[in-house]
Structure formats: C-alpha cells, structure tokens
Amino acid sequence: MSSHLPLGLLLAGIVAQFADKLALDTITLAATEAGASSRLVGLLVAAQSAAWLIVSLPAGVWADRIAPRSLILGGGGLMLSGSLIGAALLISGQANWALALSAFIAATGPVVIALSIFVLLPRMVAVGDLPRANGRLELGRAVLSLAAPLIAGWAVARGIGALGLALCALCGIVVLALALRLPAERPVATARQPLHRAIVEGGAFVLQHPYLRPIALCAIAWNLAFFAFMALFAPYAARVLLLAPETIGLSSSVYGAGLVLGAFFGATLIARLPTGLLLVFGPASSLLGALLLAIAPASLGLSALALAFFLFGFGPILWGIIQTSLRQAVTPPALLGRVSATLTTAMYGMRPLGAIAGGLAGEWLGLELAIWLPVILFALSAIAILASRMPALRTIPSGELSSAELRSGLQAG
Image 1 (tube, rainbow, N blue to C red):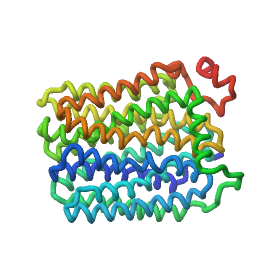
Image 2 (tube, one colour; image 1 turned 30 degrees about the vertical axis):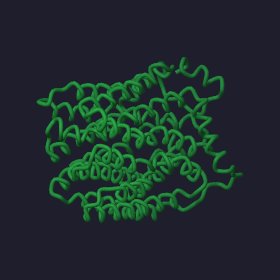
Image 3 (spheres, rainbow, N blue to C red; image 1 turned 180 degrees about the vertical axis):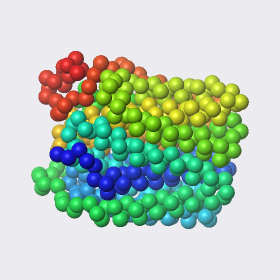
C-alpha cells in the first residue's frame, strides 16, 4: 500500500474544489451588486450547494460500483456545462432562477469527484498516513481557494462577473484532461442491493457508530451555520459595515489563508495533539469568529470580518482532516462510498437549508439581528461534540473497530 497520492487524482480534487468556491463567491457578489434581495441571494447560494444534498447519497453508491475515472469524467463535464450556462446568464444580466439552476448543475461535478477521492485514498495509503495524505490534498485545495474570493471581487467590481464562471468552466476542462490519465479499472463485481437499501445501510452504520454519529451532528449544525453566514455576509458587509466589493472580497480571502495554514500545519498538529481536542477546536473557533463579528462596531467591521473568515478556515480544516481520516480508518471498505455519502450529506447537504434560512432571516429580521443566527448554529455544532464522548479520544483508531472496541475505544485511545 503506497503513501503517495497520484498527481492526477490530487489535481482533480484541488481544481474541482477551487471551481466550487469560485462559483459560490461569484454568484453571491454578482447578485448583491445587481441589487438582489437577501431572499434571492440565499436562493442562489442554496441552488449552488443543493447538489450536495440531492446527489451525495446516490453518488456514494455509484462510487462503490463505478470506475473512478468514469465518475470524475462525468463530474468534469457537469462543471463545464453548468459554468458556461451561468456565465452566459450573467453576461445577459439574468441573476434569477435560471442562474440558480446552472449553479446546481455545475456544483454536481465536485460532489462525485470528492466522493471518488474519499473512496480511493484509504486503498492507497496506510491508516497512519491518512492525515498526512488528506492534509496534502486540503493544502492544495486551500491554496487555490485563497484566490477565489479575490478573483470574484475583482471581476464583479469591474462588471465582468461572468469571468469567474468562465474560469470555472476552464476548471471543468482541466478535470476532464486529468481524468483521462487515471486508470479505468472497475470495482470488483459484487452482489448489488437496490439503491435505496444500499443508501440505508450506509446511514445506519453512521447512526450506530460512536465516533461517526457525533461528527455527523456537528457537521449538520456547522454547515447550517456557515451557509446562513454566506447568505448574510455580503449584504451585511455592504449595507451595514459599508464595505466596497473589492474590500469584501479581500477580507473573505482570509478564509483561504486560514485554510492554507491549517492544512500546512495539520499533520504536525494532529500528530502532537489529542484527536478529541482538535475535534472540539474546529467548531469552537467558528463560534468565536461569528460572535466577534456580530458584536463588532462598524468601525472594526473589516477586521472582524477578516478574523471571522480566518477562523472559519483554520479551525474547521483541522477538524476536516482529522474527521475524514477517522472516517476512512473505521469504515469497512465495502461501505466507504455510502458512509462517505451519508457524512457528505450531513456536511454539505445542509448548505441550501442554511442559505435559505440566512436569506429569510435577513429579510424578515433585518441584517443586524439576522447575523446572530450563525452564532447560534455554530454554538450547536460545538455542543454536538462536547456533549459526546469524542473529547476523550486521544488518537485515530488503527483500523475498523469491533463491537467491543467501539464501546471501549475512547478509553483505550
């Protein structure tokens, strides 16, 4: 079993994640600058992220059954087509339901690509190397994500927001080219359950697992919070803090800096600090960032927004690396795709619900009161870990756990 991640697979994951982030930043800022209501901004963010809710579970089954190259080729094609349609709509000034549909199509690509990578990685590296391998993957994604809000802010400020989506289309072409270099072998043929039963089996494993269940609950609350914040932050920054689009883009790019630092030091911190401590630190740092922004006066708005985005990047990427490695370590190989899909739905499927909630809160309650919604939801994400036995976990388990080990693993770690 090799500890090296194939370059093509690594780059496909990095480019897909970059395109997903760039599309989100572009449509959010472009709609805000076009005078869209908080409700419409929330709808656009929800549509861009709804693929994780609708597509993740069946895609998890496909990831256990279909050659990874085929899935990644399909993902690249969806990124290309959806992004080209979205760019054409922005050029024609149509920030409406059609733009939302194009965003959904484009975002479906990164879903199947991410699931393919999750399934392949534990087959290629030892358990002890999973944090390092996941950290390298996240570092590459973070470096490019650092540029996404800067590109979006620069383009929207100059009235060429379509450029951001055109770059996403280019990313789709790059993914297609990389996928063609991957091996085309199919998984070993096994007896296949009906789709709905296969999905249920993965979900049941997560619900019964003492490590995965708290992670899922934390992920649900965190993603509700983050995407409520994403629906609110651009209108809040522009209309309450009175920041210009380029300034908003600059401050939100600090998110990428937090991701880069977290991914760069992730393997070292994971090796030296207890697993449970890092699992608490992720949601707790997000809560701190959202709270500081909510109480900051307008004169400190830029600093508070930048700090919030930094904390949203640094703490959660450590959390993401370690919980991904833990999931890969304790999940039976035959269930990897479905368990990943269940957790992916919990993590990313809450995006549209959070975005809609944030948009409606901004319209009904006003932006200054609505900004407290993410604070409350981030608090719930921290409680989900603190209320479990997860804080006592010291190390990542060395492999799939038996029933007895599942009961005693926290103490044994």
